[in-house]
Amino acid sequence: MKKLFSVLAITAMLLSLFVFSASAVSTSLSASTSSPAAGDTFTVTYTVDTKVNGFQGAFDYDTSILTLQKIVSRCNSTWNVTVTGASVLGEYNGGDPESNRLCTATFKVNKGVAEGTKYTINFVNAKVVPADGSGSVAKDVSCSGTVAAPASTDCSLKALTVGDLTLSPAFSSSTTSYSVGTVGFDVTKLNISATANDSAAKVSVSDASLKVGENTVTIKVTAASGDTKTYTITATREQDPNYVASGGTQLTSIETSAGTLSPAFKLGQKEYVIYVPFEQTTITITGAATDETIKDIKIIEDASLSIGTNELYIEVTAENGTVDKYTFYVVRMDEFGGANTLGVPASLIGTNGTTDGTAGTTTTNGASPLLMAILSACCLLFGFALGFVFHKNHKPKDKKKQPRIRVEEVEEIEEVEEIYEDFDHETLIEDIEDISSTTEKKSKKELKAEKKQAKAEAKAEAKAKKQAEKEARKAGKEKSEGDFDEYIEPSADEYLTDEPEEPANPWEYDPSIFEDKK
Image (cartoon, rainbow, N blue to C red; front, side, top):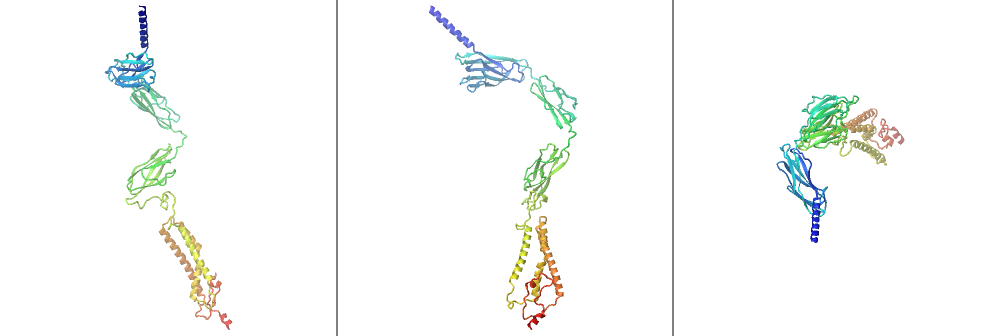
């Protein structure tokens, strides 16, 4: 009997320990708000106050009042959590729940639910398994709330002032745009005071600092419902009375929808050529500037192009009103290869056909006209010198075998030599250089004609001069006629004298010859 009593006492003690251990696990269901309005969303979180190896349960609620949007596990990634509809099952997999919050459900109050409607959310069939091995605990929990009045949608102002400045038009909560006109240069910021019509609404004002010129300040009102309304105030701040307006009109970049700028864009260059094919019928050219003082840039947009050269402009207006132009010669080629007459200014096209703004060099068979002229003159001089040396070194050695020379032949030789000596070579070279210096301005055809005319005039002038001298000599001389038995060789000085006015004549009658023989 005594033993039976002892066994019963021990059994009762163990049962009480088990009940105490089980009842020591506490779970709860808490909501982010207990008074949501119709259309609002809120969350409900299932929590346990001890470490567990698993949990399960399901959310139960009135679907005419609430809508379950989602269930999210609050356990870390080492747990396996499965959500099926309104039910959730979590199994331990080597980790602990975060802050003992096991899962969170998001609900939304249905639209049209009347203010004051009560609701209850239950987490039923709830069970947790404590990590201490004391066994699973089944315990349902719940939370409740009351639907509040809908949040206010009032996002209007009931008062708006700007220091001692006057709003135009006068303030009205339904009017959202205002102006305070022009303020002095000394006014650097607007002193704005705005009051919302609903105390639950929030008011925010943008930066009210003023720069020179027009400024816009915004006032945003956000209602409790989230609705917003924006009011604006414009103010124009005067320029510094000592300020000097800028005259800058320089573009820092130019873009074209077709073709390529020639020359390539560079600061200060205000004329360009753009070549486009026949198929290109329109073009857009834009320009940008980093100078913020520039008032306006009128670009070229979808300008129609005709075959040939199209002269287009971008106009830039400076702060002080100065208007500058950037000129574009857009050359649209014809259907068979291009326009014959470009109409592009010579300053943009070199004579070698380039359009980089640099002068080209006119060439004839690959050589400069000036070089050709100098080489020609040198060849001419070399030919005369070679003839002179050849003639001097090849005089007849045998007087008896020397061929007889007629007076007419001697006169012809004298005429050639005197033409060479009297010919103004320096003048010819200067004329050639003058003609060459104009090659960049005249066509090849004109240059050739001028050269030919200059040579002809120089030759005619020299020939006329010699003819006059020859006739003068002949008028004062007595010519000898007939042949002589013996040829008298003239000396080199007599044959090629430097004094053309008194040339030596080997056939002139000399009585002393016959006196010696006698």
